[in-house]
Amino acid sequence: MFKIVKREEMAEGTVILNEIEAPLIAKKAKPGQFVILKANEEGERIPLTMADTDPDKGTITIIYMVVGKSTALFKTLKVGEGFQDVIGPLGKATHLEKVGKVVCVGGGTGVAVLHPITRALKEIGNDVTCIIGARTKDLLILESQMKAASNDLRVCTDDGSYGHHGFVTDVLKEQLDAGDVKLVVGIGPVPMMKALANLTKPYGVKTLVSLNPIMIDGTGMCGGCRVTVGGKTKFACVDGPEFDGHQVNFDELMLRLQAYCEEEKSCYEGFCTLQDAS
Image (cartoon, rainbow, N blue to C red):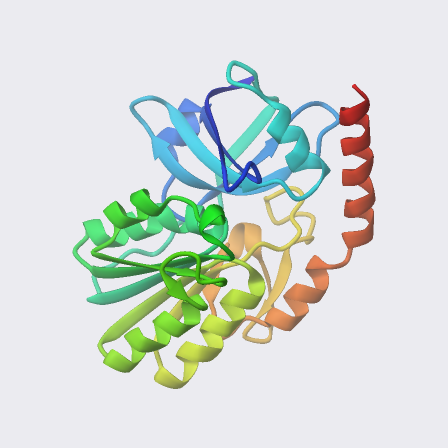
């Protein structure tokens, strides 16, 4: 069992932080990599990118939004309990180099994925501006951590309840217009990443995105996580999860992510009904 040593509910209980004992993974994990977790013998395998690691404590931190049966099951796990399986680190680590001005953009739980990448880019000497966003102030996560991980933090909310009233792309455009941006890293909902890539392309600014297709084994064997990048089929689990945002077929990715929406909704509702009955 991979024991949970810390648990925190964020964003009105819809986003859960778990710090998990996984010393071998914590020792080897690098920014941008992910793990696959399974709650129990009958559970589903869920890929989640690590929000943080602590090699000294032997722990990794994952942050997830409760959106279906499996993440709802994850939410029931308490401190002292744990996951049956935690497999990783998987995927390619973020390519880190000193390039100058970098803008990191995160939306929703994508902010958790962005955190170690932002921190690492700053640590090697880049001038990092971070833009994070959520629908409302109550759904914003990791603000203080992202402030510490960057040179300049900008916050956006769709409803204007906190920070800039509008989308992260509004603030990104201001940064691009000011000039000297060498790299943009965008992680969040697929429509947000598509909008970022469309925005940065005319400026000729290299743009990395982290993709979240349906994934099963995490080793490139099943082909479930295939995405089209530059007209070629890639597997997010072994070729990614990060890709050139200007080359990604986001429309195809969005269609594939919608393939099992009805089944997912039915399973989630059934699980919640059983939980309420118990």
